[in-house]
Length: 109
Length: 116
Image (cartoon, rainbow over all chains, first blue to last red; front, side, top):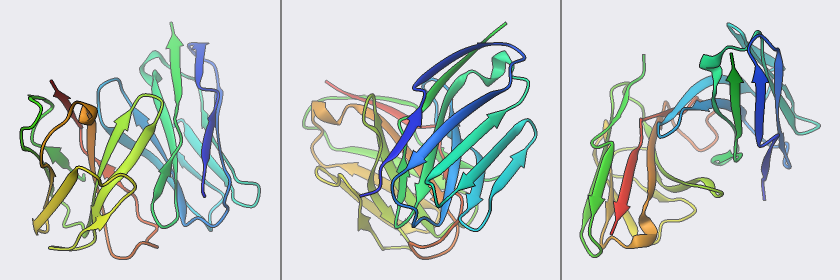
């Protein structure tokens, strides 16, 4: 059974720091991995999708990597800003999308 | 831009009521999904649909049903609402086909349902 774990569960950093969020999964037989952002009380916003054949994807200050063989993905956020404060979720796609429980990020000025 | 909309942001219903949650997407996506999100449990899949009039059970279908009469619309129905169905409900859609599709899921804003 696929399990997705995100570490840390919460993170608080000063503005301007570069930071890394981690996602691990137990079954490497996936089609893709998706990173989402969720603001309190809101829906999920898709940030990046990495297909199983890809190693990384970039969008602006965000870079996501995928190492399928080791069951790991990282989301790198460069030069963090207070507006980046949110919960970040990763999800892996096999027969369905399996979500981690998220990392709650706070970036303070 | 993909747009997934849900009929209500907040809803309060009484125990035993029949509840309809509506989801509409404007990108001609074949696949649509209903999840619920609870603290400590994350997102769990309730039902999904790969085509009009098709539906498949997810992980927690008990107490729910769905309807997909048109491609753009996917409804979640609580036949007789109970307090343990108080939750955030999220609808999502994605393009083309089969379970093995590697396509991105897009989510709606969510409906916070409270059953009293």
